[in-house]
Amino acid sequence: MDVPRDQIISLIDQGLFTSAEMLVSLSLCFGCFLVSSSSVNAETGPHLKAENLVLLGDALFRQREYRRSIHAYKQALQYHRVNPKQSSASIRNSLSASNRSSSPNSFHVSAINENEVKFKIASCLCSLNDGKTAIAELEGIPSKARNLQMNLLMGKLYRNSRHNRASALCYKECLRNCPYIFEAIIALAELGASAKDIISLFPQTPNRSNRSSCDHFDSTRWLQRYVEAQCCISCNDYKGGLEIFIELLQRFPNNIHLLLEVAKVEAIIGKNDEAIMNFEKARSIDPYVVTYMDEYAMLLKKKSDNTKLGKLVHDLLNIDPTRPEVFVALSVLWERKDEKAALSYAEKSIRIDERHVPGYIMKGNLSLSMGRLEASVIAFRVAQELRPDLRTYQGLVRSYLAYSKIKEALYAAREAMKAMPHSARALKLVGDVHASNPSGREKAKKFYESALRLEPSYLGAALALAELHVLEGRNGDAVSLLERYLKDWADDSLHVKLAQVFAATNMLQEALSHYQAALRINPQNEAARKGLDRLEKQMKGVDPDAPEDDEENEVEEADGDPEETELI
Image (cartoon, rainbow, N blue to C red; front, side, top):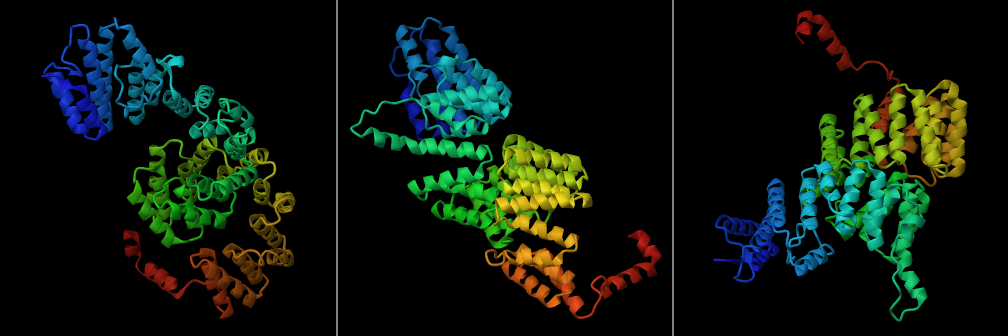
């Protein structure tokens, strides 16, 4: 008895993949083919069996049985090639099918198309993380026969294997067919294409409606501005990119994608409060969004908002525990409790997605704090190759300085300055390297002052310059500089620095006031807690450097029993 092909398609469309798989398998075992009519002759038999096997592959793909799916697709190709004499109508159907969806989720194709089956095999190989073989499979499809999905997948695979030129060609082909492939726009921007080059790829569609040419221009202008924003960000022009994204948000208010892009850029340039506000706004609109939530987790950690951080991680685990962002957020959560566990979560995020930059940034920071300096340098270098931004340069500089490799640190800082010539933060980074050496303090002072001239509200440069004043014995200059920022900044690190300067000049009451202010803003600030504890001892007339009574007793007990000490 013949099994109608439409029945199998219907089962797959309704998500009944196991039933579809069993029915196709039974048909294959008993030698009957899926047909829409009762007549099957010897010539059409192998071709119908090929269709049958493609449906089996589709059902297996949806059940994530990728190796079995590949086997079915390859068998289908073998049967397809058994019958080389296809009618001209079959060939026409095959060619038209190549312009439709070729994903393993598309089942409404009346005749097997060899190029589509190759694409399905490549999709399975991607799911098995075998990019090299997937590329070889896709390269077997003639370039003129590749549709949008094929070119997009090839672009991603070429980029993952660092064949950037071939990747760019595939992405460009996508945009020539459809200007709204945002993955292609972002990838080309990150690969160094200019906004003008990307926009020139867009197909020029005639204005057939009754709208004026002015209206037509306005309807496409937003897409051009989006391209410009992505190119600005990729060129480290964060200010320019942020301005365009905010402009687009005014046109498309509460758009999740734009809100997240704005928040991510604000996080990179240190506008932490604004970034947190936009991340929270995005979550209020869509509580199930996962994209960039690891960036949000890092900001909550900086703010020591452990309650929100814990809730965020709990929510993300319930939404999708397979995403790399979730494991970076877990790494952030565990950083204070268990650095080894935190590092394993960061590495897990990288295993899920080898191009996930926050995973490398987190791994670099953790490796640095654990004294694994070589590992931290490698992690930040990989992050920089994938997407160079301010944080990767900062991580590299801190790693090299911890390594006492001043020359390499200075080179990395100057790289940042070249990449971001109008960035106060890049200037400050060069100053940090010079400040690490007593002989370079004068140069450091000039870089910090230049950073503040470029961006007078940049607190990081002000704190660094104040520290330099203290090291040079200019405590009064440090206080006057920092007090200028008190009007506009409710920042715990600012109060801690002022408290330290006042404590060093024996102005204990003023120091006490600022330590308390810092702890009101951030009760988890470790520097403020330790500084306050030390200050209170000073105010009581106790030597803050003297060992605690408990510590003395522990030493005496240890000294009193040498045998026990040896056992320990």
